[in-house]
Amino acid sequence: MNKDLNIKFEKAYIIASETTHKLPPDIMLKFYAYYKQATKGNDYKQSKNDNVELRNAFKLNAWLQLNHLSEDEAKQHYIKLVNKHLKPKK
Image (tube, rainbow, N blue to C red):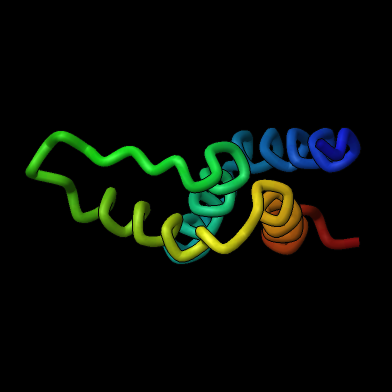
């Protein structure tokens, strides 16, 4: 594991978690999907509830589209997403 990458990822996660900035739904789905791929890899858990909400279906679909990425690659993409949408511009 790349310790520096993990530190940067944790910092990016904190920024994203604490933001009050409203982002479009498609960007929020990217945040979700990259985070899940970075922390869970391809360990998808199927809901036992047959009445899966549409929102959860979109979230799972976004995550499934990233199954080609390693956890480290997903962390790098997540960090870039935070830097692009949540970091103050200088």
